Length: 389
Image (cartoon, rainbow, N blue to C red; front, side, top):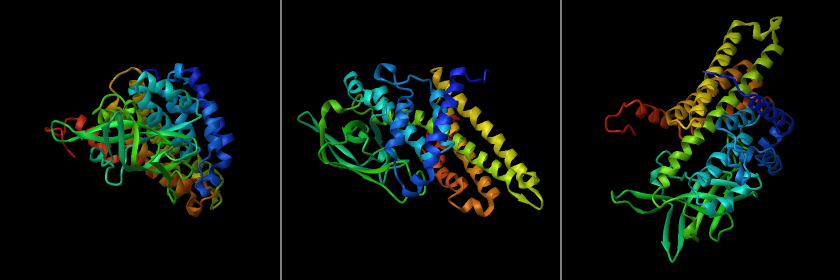
């Protein structure tokens, strides 16, 4: 198996790394402390093509393969998880469902501005009482006189309340199926629709410069044609969207682990104790050796999952494994990074502290680590009845 990147992918990595170092890194501490989303940086990322990475060029996207897109997210996360989250959520949760399931009219209406990075789009899935149990959604949509009337709320929605946000794909309950279970459908809602309110969330531990929102729907009426795909297909659309989105979260874990490792290695070589760099003490050298090894293993697992997707092979299991492993590798790396920094690892001016904070969401967002283990164990046939939940 050829593990080498193409010359184009090598150049892409170099370009994104230079952008992250020159444009994002000088603003990371300030934006994080202010909990401030940056339209300026987001627009620049749009100009670089990051926000339309995988979108079809006929809608203004870059048409990149999955691996190339993942390299973008990885390199951004190496410097700042918040900016990586903006890009990953917009591509996988924003553009992805519209391009994959939308009608020709919907694609023409929304994708050009989204692919160009002029506008952002969000995906309204999580509710206060429906996280891992996504089918337990309480947000409803009823069809009457050619319009959907939506009522309910969503929470923890990335890119949901910025000045650039154009709208949201909302998972709703549109009735009951023949089996008595909720009929789930996804509906596109423009941001300025009457009765739709988006409220920015603050006081977060993680991704403080990423926009996170609560969404409220008070008899929000949209045309019947705003239904995404077929009525009742919303749950399948959501699962397919999360399968692809997990690769982006895995890339954030890989990139974040790389950034934390590099910070720890640099500090360990500079910091001296008992007359020599602390990297020369085996207790620290072995920590760094473990980090480097696990990062390489995580990269190979994630890149294989991307290869499977690009080859149009079944990548669901590999995506769950990559998301789980990369998230937990970053957990172990950031713990070592803080320990190597000692007291300075607890000070926000040093990058180790932020990497430590930002890691936690990777074990929760787009399917918790527990859900990933459930997906993996089901694929192994551990449950005769298909259960395990």
